[in-house]
Length: 142
Length: 353
Image (cartoon, rainbow over the protein chains, first blue to last red):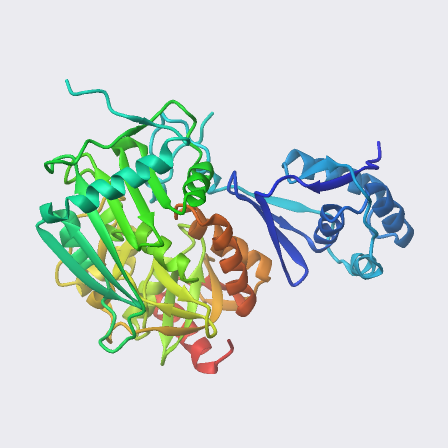
């Protein structure tokens, strides 16, 4: 099923920066990092600024860069990671610059989760210290 | 059996922080030791009792050189329930402890803080007044990692308020220029720093260095501590090099100082010209190849942010800016320390950064 809605960044705890066109996102509340491929970065940029998924799918299908199924699945991942939430409001337009960048992207649509150190973030009051990690790391609440 | 201890929640946290700061300051006359340490742009004054922490404060820091401008001062009171008039530390209540929520709640009250459950070890800082308090159950009621980089949380908060940052990274330098070695534990940072020091390079520190982005990227030394596990210690020939060394630390590592093995005094600073992500390759020869800024950022930022309480977003922005200012490389580490050092040395001598 195609995603057709509008999305927004899930909370103020989701912060991101772009490095030479590749996005890195940090969820401050969980300590999880997300590294995006170049095409993923463009799709993230579009979705997080309010471009409707349906418009993205139409545009990317037309230029033949990313398929509708891939975008569907990618959006599902971003929702599952808690980076985006469905939103209401006026849709944003997909800029021609972003579309050009998307057409020039060389990597497949991808977001990698880096959560090796996220265990510092949520801690149950009763826990054990993971001393071998070297610093005040504590086991994650279950 | 003593009276039940106060249980802290997010709601009561700011009041408790102010209470701890006030109690610690009010007992200023009770601390027999006052240590002053001159650090880059900061004079740190610590009030505490004799013992392992006082020794660590005397040994672990790299004092700033005379003549370096002091732009401020901060005072830390290290106290515990064994001192008359100091109450036992409170404990965290039944509420789930979420460090980001903890830090956010304190930040809303203009404060900083951290808590280590197992020891009911509290640290609070008021960045406006530049005053901090560390409250422990007893004189030795601190986590085992504290003596290696004492009071680092307070320095983190004070320097963050000035737009600088304690950064979890190693450094190597030559003639005032240097590289920053970023990456999580086990990536090879410490072994690379030691290999460089043993072969004529400089360093302003391993584990934690102070970074300023005001004019380019400048790294300053804070802590002189180096660590190596027994395998690395043997591989690097440190047993023969060091005149004496202490028993293994709490991590099962040898702990020693930069100036125990450096050919020259620790530089006052290094102008950082590149960010390198070390990687143990298993190849005989080392190599340096470009890596994307995204990958360099993901190697550098997580440990630097997660090992420091609070200031997560400012840390993310800071490390983003740092990464954007520098060319980024993957340093694939060969198997021979002298060859690793020569590879970094050649890079610095070429001025590729």
